[in-house]
Length: 215
Image 1: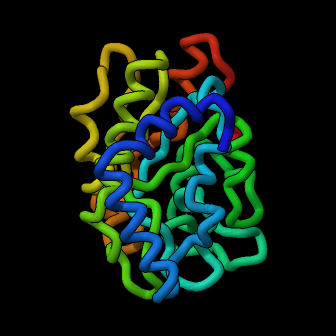
Image 2 (image 1 turned 30 degrees about the vertical axis):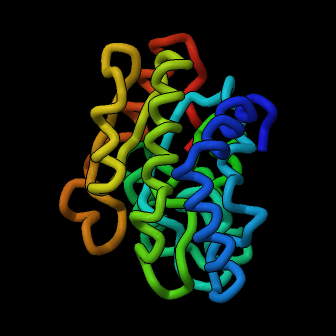
């Protein structure tokens, strides 16, 4: 993880809820197949806190082998592009013309200051939502509160019900909040397609003196 996150993470790791979550995860990793791999769980926090411009909040990691890599919606370049990400790329294409990535890795977004965060950071293989209610939601609530307090003029993209529940944590006079349905094929046609989040995000960033994201 990046140095800039260490004070925040250290303080969260010492809280009772996180100690309980750690115990649960230790047992899960010992006895089941859990994604992503242990060393990738906090990969989103390798993004320099001070360079974060955009926060994309999803649900939980991909639960199929080889897909989850610790960045929301991203998969290793060697993997097929998952349906949710195909829909994200479709929306970028209709919104701003063309997406820049040729594969499913969103590491290029991370390098530009996009924090790719899920509300729950781990999942059991083939069991979507299996690690909900174990403590991750408390952790990611604290992350959003911290970003809201410590930074100004961020763009928060909240996709899906779990992510949208965090809206009340964000001061909308300091930050831009963009809400939409989850890009999954089950819900993309109920408010994700046509949301134009990518152009709205870049307009806001430029207005506040920052470079837009190359999506």
